[in-house]
Amino acid sequence: MAVKTDAIALTPTWEAYTGYAETAGPFENQVLYAMCRDNPAHGDPYVTAGKITAIGRIYAAAPERGAGSGREPGSLSQAIAVRLANSPLDDRLNAIAFAERFSKANIGQIVEAHRLLVQEVALATRGWSISGDDGAWSPRNQASFASKYLHFHRPNAFPIMDSYAKAGLACAGLKGPFGTYEQFCAGIARHVEGQDLSWTPRSIDTHLVIRGRAHLDRTGSLCRQCGVEFVRRPRKAKAVVLNSG
Image (cartoon, rainbow, N blue to C red; front, side, top):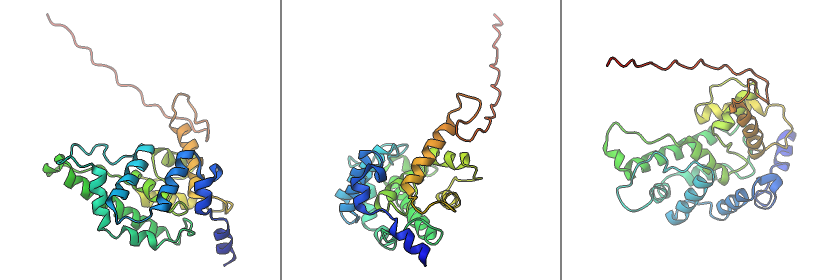
């Protein structure tokens, strides 16, 4: 019980996320945290579409990427927002208290809320996009966007998943796979075992992104963070076309 009390005591408040760079990181993060703090619900599509657009664009994870063209003038963000207004997303988020930090105890709730959002985005995209007329077409899996969107609503609970963070876990010596959010969260849970309780999903993300960028930078022969030697695949020889004329 003492550990749980200490963890709650060290959990950053909304004030920390919206007012202190040490907790939030760049100023734009403070703006996004404040936006979601002041407008947490999803009943108003106008507000939700704005949150989707702001988070998606600032974090280079806009659902419009790879979605094709819309059937009507309305934006995809608006179409997603309309679906979320009639979804149980708010119930899933309300079940996770702001002070609850990411842990093995609530990882199931976190993954389930993420899975719901990914599904709603996919259904909205298929209905919005002209590409949906092709029965074989499937929208992109927006797992990265969903993790970022949910993080700004519950920053203490939802880790951000992207290619840098996944590479950062590998650089830290954890074995994958980390392809799904569930697998990624399991990796995060292993990564924070034994760490000082002052960590947050934001601080872990910053750490992993730094490691991940170095790990994905193959300009040298070794990773600058973990020292692993990069295995370079030999380039395929170009075919030589002989002129028979």
